[in-house]
Every structure is written in C-alpha cells, then in structure tokens.
Length: 415
Ligand code: EPU
Image (cartoon, rainbow, N blue to C red; front, side, top):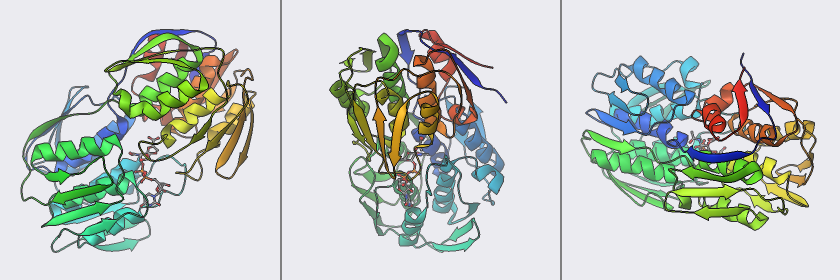
C-alpha cells in the first residue's frame, strides 16, 4: 500500500485553489435521484468518496456522465433494489440513499453506513425523522428495511443538531404529502447547499441554515443545476498549515464567512490573516500563544478542524486546551503527535497540548480522514522525514492534496 512521505521544514508560498465541499457533494449526489429528470452538479471534488457514491448510483441503474469537474446524473431508469453492505459501509454518506430512495419509492433496503471511526455515530435521529413522516422500520442486524404506504409531513425535534439527520429528513420530506418542520436542525452551510439544489428542482424548503427548517412536499422534481460550495474544512486545513509554515499563502475560491470561527481563533493566537471577498491570505509568525478550542455545530468551531488544529497548538507558547464535544473518539491523532515529540495529555473529551516543542518526523498512521490532515501538517513542520500510512482515509476527503501542497512548495509525495 502507498504511503505519503514528507520532508519537513520547507516554507509554503503561492496560491492554492479550494475544491468543492466533500460533505456537500456526498449529499448532493444521492439527492439527485429524487429528481424525475437529469441533474448536473458542478465543482465536484476529486475524492474517493465521490467514486464510492458513483458505484451505488451505477448499481441502482442511474446513468452518469462525469467529466471530472461536473457530473450529470440521469435517475430515470433507476431500479430500487437492496444496496449491498460491501458498498454502503465504504462511507457515512451512503445513508443519504436511504432517504432519497425512501422519499422517491416509499421503500428502501440497505445497511448501516460506514465512515471514519471517530465515535459510535448512531442513526437514531434519522430514523426518528423517517418515523415522523409515516415510515415503518424493520431492523435485522445491521440491515434496515424502511417502507411507507404513504409519506406525510410531520414535526421532528432533533435531540442534537445532527447534520445527517437534518439532510435525511429533508430528503424524505420534499416528496411527502403536506408540511414538515424540523426543529433544532443543524445549520451547516452544506445543508443550505443541499436545500438550494432541491429548491432548484422545484422543492419548497425554507429556513435551511437556521435551526427551524420547513418543507412543503411536492409531487414532481425537475431537471436543474447546482454548484458545490467551496470546502470549508479543506480551506481551514490549508489555513492551519500556512499559519505554521506559510509566507503569504493565498487560499482562493473560498467563502470566508464559512471559516470565521477558525480565522478568529488563529488571529487570537497571533496569526496574520487577510480576508478578501473570496480569498484568504495567511502568513506564519513565530509568536503564537496558547488558545482554547471547543468544538460545536456551525457557526461554532468545527470538529472536522479540531484534529488539524491540534498540530497548530503544538507550536503555540503555553498550554492549549481542546474540548471535543461532538465525537467520543476523535483524539487518535494525538498519539502520533506524541510520537513526533509533542507533550499532550488527554482526559475524556479534553486534550491539553504543551506548545513550542519541535516535532520530529517518523512513521505515523492516518487512523481517519482528519487525523491524516493533522499528520500531514505535522510532517510539513517537522524536522526530517515523516511517513504516513493508511492514506486511503486522506484520499477519501482531500481533493488532489499532494499536487496542491507541492504547488506551494511542500516536499510531499505518494510512495
Ligand atoms: N448523532 C446521534 N444520533 C444521530 C445522529 C448523530 O447520536 O442520529 C450524534 C453523532 O454520534 C455525533 C453528533 O451527533 O456525535 C453529530 O453527528 P452528525 O449527524 O452531525 O454528523 P454526521 O452527519 O454523521 C457530518 C459530516 C462529518 C462531520 C459532522 C459534524 C458528512 C458525510 N459527515 O457527519 O464529517 O464531522 O457532520 O459536522 O457530512 C469529516 O468530514 O471528517 C466528517 C466526519
């Protein structure tokens, strides 16, 4: 299996272009099958999660025209059949097919989804949404058969603002009869992107991006076009790398408001950041001070940037704290940062990171996607060579990451 090899200590400078958001694209692709006609999605990132979803589409009989940047999906000849576990377990987002197939055909049969091993990640809130709209659930082991004679709008209160449960409930509600209200909905920009896509098809969704979303069901959905929004987590990952070892790195094609929490935390630590309409320029400084991070749903500090940020904190003066409130097991990367020389203590959902300790390159493992991002950044600043194994996790979610980093001066390759 291939590894990522990084020679640390090379300054980053120049321009980096941000791709479409993974967590939007992986919901937009399954949402496409709700439509009665062809749809086109542009600015699709080049990530392996996309290809895993394409496999499910092809398995169901959808026609796909993928030119690398945009993808046209024709769902008119789909056959609603059971999706095998071998393909649904490849990624978390496979469960968006649960809701789009249920919404369109009123029946679906598939297995518990996959995804990074960062916590238990139950799907009870999604199931609650389905039930509120009139669906019945039969669970046999990890297999779910979900069906309804008729789907009717209903009111759903989510126990936590779950991104997946919010999107899944929207996907079922758009073709249900009557009005659905989701209370305590997640507010992430990716949800707005999905709602815009569905509204472009003729759905009637209001309130996406707030904690109360209303959906008026419609009978038909027509051909449309949507552009995937820029990836705010990819943006943040390159901002963090640049804050550590960048000289005026210009990160382009971004929506600065989507990374406001990170921008303000980096500035609080002393990093110089210039923000334009669709770009952000970041330079490193040697005078960063310790800060505290607490992960929250949008617009709070995103859990998906918590692991990349841990590398940054190893270089801040003093002891920084991370409080991870979303996932129970998202600190696996810290063992490898310790192996690289940092001094970190963890206590349940908190990590205490002592700063200003020089990291040294060694063999490390990308245990999950954002752990991989953490270790790439660590490799960029470390003394000597870092070898990262299990890189398929990284390639699941970062579009052309090797080329992008090489273009701004990093010594990084796949070997
Ligand atoms: N939760 C439940 N029950 C549910 C749903 C969620 O207990 O029915 C819990 C989860 O266990 C977790 C928390 O609620 O502790 C938040 O989960 P959420 O449903 O919001 O997450 P998700 O939809 O599974 C998406 C992203 C994640 C990102 C989270 C939070 C996709 C495919 N995944 O996951 O992305 O961390 O939202 O923003 O969109 C990543 O990109 O690295 C990644 C893990």
